[in-house]
Length: 144
Image (tube, rainbow, N blue to C red):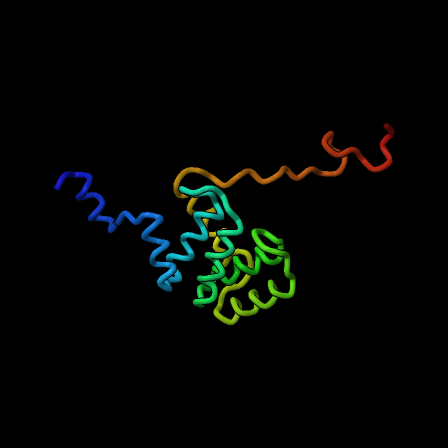
């Protein structure tokens, strides 16, 4: 065993392929469906595909995965990868709340931001907030 193998063993890493995750998810493993949803939602190792992400998140949510319940609600609320359905979103948010998951910090994608930061990728830049009267946004009534 070389030094690299020792390192992997020390921190408990295992290599799982996307195919392994898919087989596990289709076999009923909500954690695998959750991870596939994240990969599709973020475009990690696969093309970004919100419809497929929604499918995987919904599969995990149906198995009582709380963060995925919030993610499904979020996507339904905004019509990301699915038809917008505010009533359906409210139902999923309520289900998640009953399991102790509340607000945007409980969403799967919220956790992805943490992972990005840990990997040194950083979160995508937020659009700048402009104060009224700055050059980016003229004061109301300013002449043109």
